[in-house]
Length: 289
Image 1 (tube, rainbow, N blue to C red):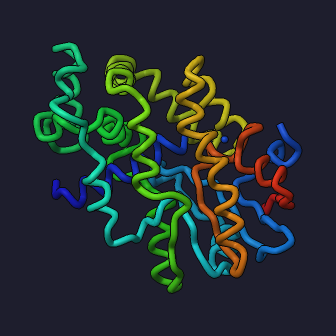
Image 2 (image 1 turned 135 degrees about the vertical axis):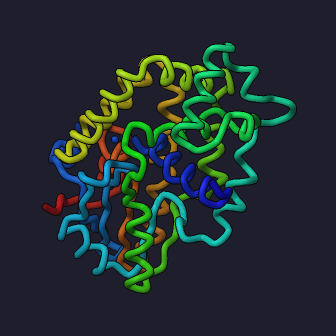
Image 3 (image 1 turned 90 degrees about the vertical axis):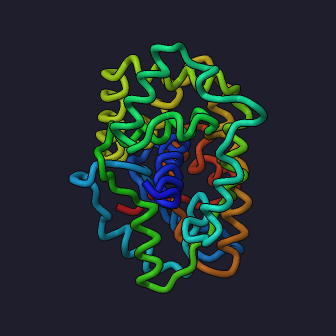
């Protein structure tokens, strides 16, 4: 696998890890919302799922219509940035002399090597200094198919076809900083759980796809809270802190032009989800069927 292909694959899978969000608006099922407020141009917010099986993927007519009606496309990061691969390379590796081998039992390290060879086309030795959660992102495709579909990649293609600019709510450095707040051992432990409880993760991903197709953003958010359990700090890092930072940026982007915002659907629901935070900031948030 070429390094550029590897990095792009990790980027999409990484979004899957970060974007796998009771409030009047949030209780309405839906993935597409019109957002309005005095001082901004009417815009749209769409909840994506970063990876899903090809045979279950679709872009609804209402989503494509909102996309084409918008002047600017803003995703979690700028997915068509020519420096994306270079920026990722700068943040992929662990600090110092740390290697993956240090954080796994011999048995789990061997399992990881076998899984990577099967699903990523390379052994663990080739990426032995990569941050564990980035390695985990390479295994996610096992649960959604060898060639999963991606809303983000589809939006990049649509942007090219419609000559629309793509920008980001955060940078690669912003997203990678999430990993740096989680100890390497804790990251590796998550991988070990995935390696040793395949049934649980298969069920989890199937449930996520089911809830996404049902457009139930509250239930998607509940999957996060259940998964992280008492790890409230991690949930804040992965979802809540980022949600709060996005609200003023949404207003800045939409001040002079209509914007189509696309973020992981897991960010939408909950009291600290983007839908509720927008309402608290004075936005009118209306579901678009």
